[in-house]
Image (cartoon, rainbow, N blue to C red; front, side):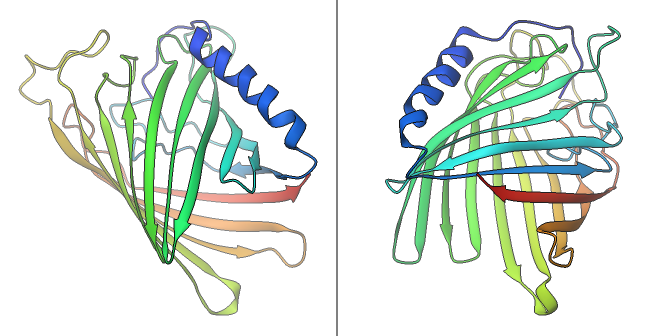
Amino acid sequence: MTMFTANKLTKFGLVTAVAGMMVAAPMLASAGVSGNIGVFSDYVLRGINGAGGTEGNGPVVQGGFDYSGDSGVYAGYWGSNLGYSNGSTASGFENDFYAGWGGSSGDVSYSIGFIQYYYLHVANSDGLEIYPTVSYGPVSFGLKYLTSDVAWGNSGDIYWTLGYSASLPADFNLSATAGYYTYKKDGKYIKTSTDPSAKSSAFRHLDVSLSHPIGKTGADMSFTYTLPGKDRMGVDQKDAVVLGVKYGFDI
């Protein structure tokens, strides 16, 4: 995401976060509630890793909570420290509030939801994305549609993803995600109509991850390699390797 100064939580984000808590609270006893916490050597977001962008944070702590109901309704929170801010002494922090609904028919599963992003010490970056997803076996296809102009994108930007996951021998797990962007030229914070290097669409990244449980601790160790593409201004991103340890638990 692009580095700018701090701003306040959007009214929509606050309303949806509070409403989600009110709806979920009476159902917690019968629903599945879980949490996770992890430490990672870097935060590479959608292929952006420091070349012409502001990712490339160095070590980060990330984690959150997830609720899932029998009806297919789900909600959750995820957060991460950031290696940049508005220039103040405090580092930035990303908060993601999300909710949606999913179901399945035979081997096909599907879902639709939204993510409200709320940043501390990073301005003009709070935004909402809507994301439908469909999966068939180990393959998934989805998109995230940005609904407003923010410092890191324009309203109408679409982030397309194609994913694959598989279990390997000896308890190893493999996953891969390819990302592609289609961009709107001009927004409140990003204007590219007069820049000849600006892209209307571009391949962003291919992430390949290998993970394995750490004994019987309940934690997993992961290794992720990012084959990068270009950002919206045509800047080639750098290859990246991220090592991580993540622990999941039931509540």
